[in-house]
Image 1: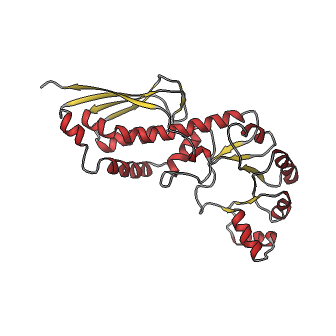
Image 2: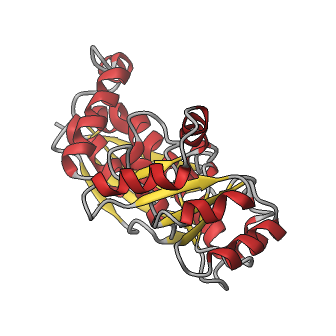
Image 3: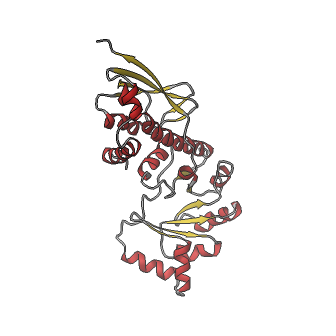
Length: 287
């Protein structure tokens, strides 16, 4: 999902936004022959994510800048650890610093939050999944970070799978359409490889939806008792996904109801940037 082409396209746009006519401060204050060495240091523990993206910020600014990644995406680290070492022309290192940090802090924050959710349910067979509640233009980056934290990706886009949600079902109800028949008709026209998921918000919706032969049923904003009842009703006929009301305080109990997947929008829409810093040392080369 996170290809080099995607990384370069997004990072190049970020660099252009940050320095459309160059870095005036560095160009006028820093000697042209100055070189810099910088450590990407952790101010708090977490899960690393975005190494290639961090490297791209410096590479696209100046190919002479070298980035050595000390940890790999998906690795846990402690406060005080050095995560990467950057070296090269000082002007270029300083020009790329903020963009590189913005990406790696954001991605590591998502990976770390995901890791906490995954740890909470490690004793169950449920998996943590993200949603489409991502920053526009950064979905590939943020979903890569979710995987680094031990989570799983939901459908990438509207083009990847059929997912009938409450608004879709509301339209069918207004047309007085039978949900089972409408779903069966849609499935009959789909390629056999296309996955179909349907969201329900009431117990009585489960049987009519399952009768259509769907692959996943999402139980939205169900209570814990309703989730247990829903899992029992489904009885293995479809993958059961829980959504709504999920946070670090509730996710363990939700997983223990027996659901297969727990989707968490907060992984990407509410994760805070991790506290990482670039400690720069500048030397002026002697003539």
